[in-house]
Length: 293
Image 1: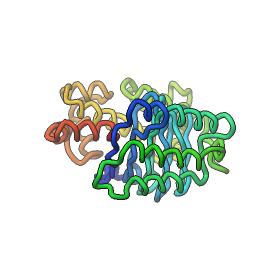
Image 2: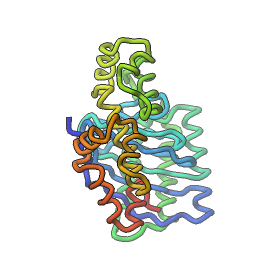
Image 3: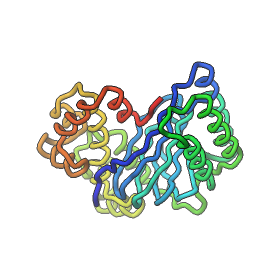
Image 4: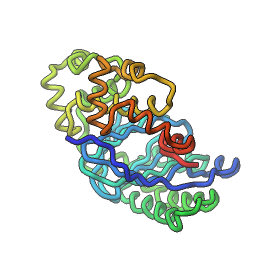
């Protein structure tokens, strides 16, 4: 299965919200991501944000905390920025990602979580509409006030329409839920899927069969994807050697790390690090967080 990252992400240029707007309702990100089937995109935790994810085409699995939801076009889900978020496309897809901050976003999403849920059956329509409004004249930087007005319309469309999860969705079995938590938390320390199966007190064959059925990839492939995503983050920082990154992300040796990295990214780790640091600092920062303020 091809895990190479698509390069056609579109990240809109947003003016940084002022103190008042960021405290009330600010837009921290507005992106259209292109994801390839079988790949993994990880978004690290960022306190104070709410992230709305909506596939514009193709089917997508999202995982955050101990939850995992399938999403289809026109659907959307919100995730608290205090949790790591993983996007796992079941097929090639385009995904709308909007990140909001401020008291208004906190109030609306908190109310949705208490009175319904953070899954929105038709929320993708409102998210895509906001992205379209922000994209009008996208050669300019979108003023913070204008972006906040569109964000308010989005929140009003979502308010009161949340539900606990996709109707009729398959609930992940406990063994898969537990495996996802361990893989995302302890990726750097796991010696392999045998150890994971031992910790879960199941056979490796049973774990692999369940994981493939519900996640579409083997636990070993998922583990390598998590490690590669974290390796990319470390390499973009430009402060660590390739060997340090290999060790820090749990690879058994540098040669194996280089092979897996090339297979996933299309270049070896040193080439990737050089490419990142040939970019202007502002471009490196944008790629590192996916957000342009």
